[in-house]
View 1 (spheres, rainbow, N blue to C red):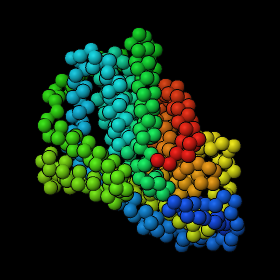
View 2 (cartoon, one colour):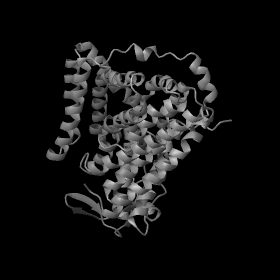
View 3 (cartoon, one colour):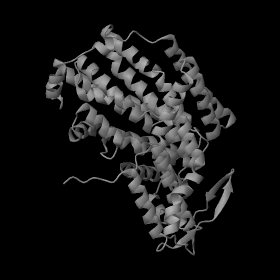
View 4 (cartoon, rainbow, N blue to C red):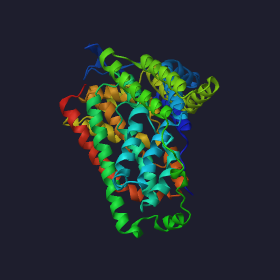
Length: 463
């Protein structure tokens, strides 16, 4: 009998019930706080016990709706940005860009060599900028035949869009769904620390490309070494490249849409850096982008609204996760046990150096990612605890956000991830076979994450 974990919503509600029960046995506590440079920080060593306020059944059942109210700004932001990106994807401009590069593979030896670096970079950029995750799933059906045509294997065809987008998501520098939300909750200026995050993304993407290039060279020499060799042989018998050859290239509208998207990202960076834009302004910017993209692509009002509502509807589940996660914080706050838990966690994370403390935070986030693998939901659940915990253990909140991000590097190998399971089912690749193949790359990600957390922890990284 296989062990099957409950879905995210059941886990979060169970956590709500557990927290409500905990308020009856965990003593209340409080730290003193002080205002430093406009931020409220915890004073280390100031913890003292106070009377707890046990939370009953009524508090438990009303926590989710209270979570909706307190997280309304973040939830609205997620729904609007999700709708805007659905309009962008509805223009097929991104799909056209991918197919345009794919078509060139049969015409140039240079392109054939550059296929892995170019496509992994594109998908990684998608994850790093607009949170591409589930959107990468359909591209598996394009890249498996492309990989087989290039004398590679199914695993490479899966990894280019899937691992590429996931590593970009985990090391993102502009992703509003994990970086933006986490920084907002942690009280850190939105999209600050852009330079170092861009460096982390570059390194992680390069590691991914290097691994796949090494694997590709090995498979070209000895195809039988691939775990999917038998499957690949059968697939090659029915290989059809017509979908690539039928593509006639990007239209002027596609190019205009992509330029609008690039301009939006540049305006967002400028607004955040120069004018201190926050969630409201960024949501408004993406709403303007959606309208402009719809106009350029000549979408009718009905087509525009259908795409926008489809994108927002796809993120209703994320909104529920955020509300439930916020509800856990509300129960702990009203039960007055947050500071007690922080005081108990601090010795587990605290270390002789801030570097080890940051790396322990990364380990904790990696474990949490196994159970809660929604980037936005995980930020809503963990950052209210991790941000003040960072103050106690001598790590900046900026570094705590980075540790949270890196925790998502395990997503490609966790069976609780709907994206992972969905991709492998579509590709007909057994989960165990995939994990064994991914383990060396996951080892590289682990070493990379630990190393990249060292510098900001040692230097007190803020901006």
